Image 1: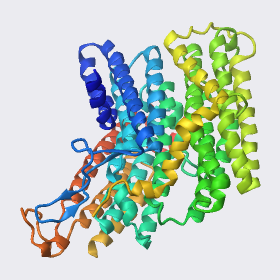
Image 2: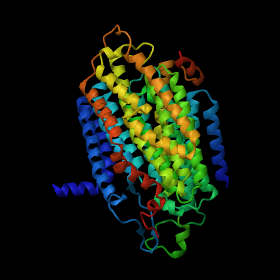
Image 3: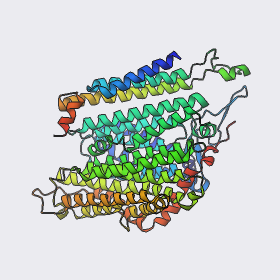
Image 4: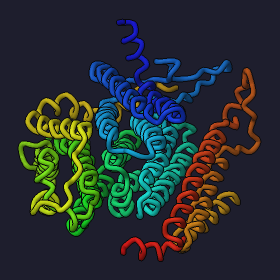
Length: 519
Length: 115
């Protein structure tokens, strides 16, 4: 028994990615025999990868960075018979930050699959395999140590995401899916050109090796611009946010919840590029301020657009853009003061706030998308002008929606408050105006969620009695709202256990680039 | 040098087609042009003039610096396959768009969707 556990934990790093991928093909093959087999295969794949993430997390918290090359755990260079030594292996690499992202992904994927059981009543044969491929691509993006692998996993996840947007083939779906794939392809091409530029100069694709080798020439700056733009497009930050409301709005709610994690994986890649890959040479203040300005614009434009929406899921998608702004703001402040005494004073706190906000955001935004899906399931429409009085028939969903809405606006004692407070305080020390804008955006967020609450859940009873919500959907929402409350009540435990190792892993570029000693 | 000119030309044509053409099929052709330009850029990185093929058991020291490594070719093959997949997805979406709205004109699509 113990042998099995130790075997699995040594190999956990690549099993995390492989298990959902194999599950996808297995589910696709099994669906030819019987459609009912798709769900259990999907559920077991995501549960197993959740277990592997936990096994890996133990190792990372105990011993720092874990790297793996499938067949050799420690060998990092290839010595040719002639004596020439090349760092050519493709690495998987997990440090505090990537294990946090993998944890977020595994949590949301398990709950989203459970939610799908009774929510997805048609197209299961396509839905589950594509969902599993998307999950596997997300894990790959956060666990890879190789730039080209990053590109491949990005494309895997965005192509399967496009397929998932088409699940229900409603009126708007093909158009939304077309926008998503166009933006993804252009972003991926930018990233590929940047990878080519870096390869042409340093003959390597390994991120740790590149971090040591980068000379900060003009070509490197162009590569940084291309990588930055590509990942910012995929993360859905303003000004390339136009695909977000369409893509989030037209997918099934369970997939929208995972799309949040997917854009955070792009955000993770963006931070990884800025802090680890270019961490030793980057001009902190300039790039930090660019991230801050993008963050403030995303925050403000996202919430202003959300105020005027009439479709409940498009409204929530615009809030997702706005909340991405908070994460960019905090990390931008951290980057702008990195390496100065101010970093210890408030910079690391800003980083902790926004990394914690990534965790919290995927929990409460996932919850809100799932409640929106439940509203659609029950009432058959997502239009706020047609919805009314659902609170009479769906008391539990109403409570879950309120928990999510309070968390996103940052009211105590929910989890949004804990991370937003950290961001407000630290950003105030950096620049009070930015903090004031962040507070204003929170108030506008509250206003728009009050509109949804009044329109959908209060008012006279609807003419048609809504369908009852199945137990699996309620279970997924219950778990997420409990997590909202628990993370809000005990933020200190989560900060110490998950967030601080992540921030340390992100800011210590030296330890990232020094994982392997290359000749 | 000529190859970079061709790449720049292809990129310019691709972005022009993507941004200024209204027909979805033409937009897909624009994206395919951009993909091809990027692939050509990647493959051009692998070219070493007077290079040595990497098929030695024990390579002499003078070949080390001008060895033609197969990495860019492997990258390009992968990128071509991925480009094929995304082009196929885009074309099938264009078919769905035409079935749903009876048009491929993106300016008319905006009007249909905002109704």
